[in-house]
Length: 104
Image (cartoon, rainbow, N blue to C red; front, top):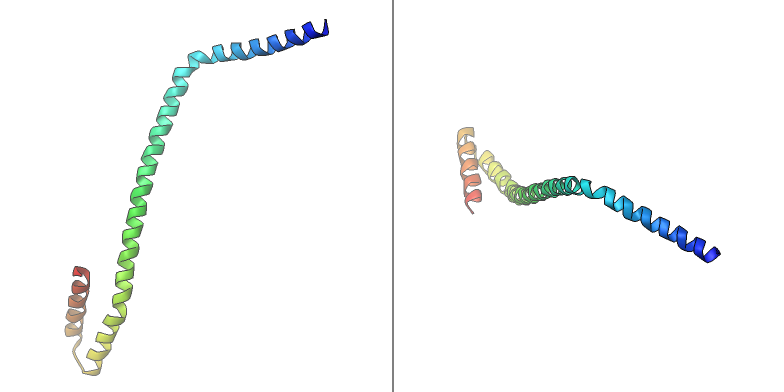
């Protein structure tokens, strides 16, 4: 008798699980659509994140180039200042130097 009762309880538990699965079938389409939309959003965010990472790396390289050229520009300005070169010439020289650095 106890064994039959255990079998009945197990059967009822399994039956409840199967009935719950069957109840969820009509919602399956809706859930799949939601998952598909979420996946598309994730894909878009991954693409945006990759682009942002590329832009950050490019910006970092540009900052390194600018940082490495600052001592050269300052040295040129000090040299020109010591030799009494006028300010417009100094600006022109600095622009030319920056342009040649950017071309490299």
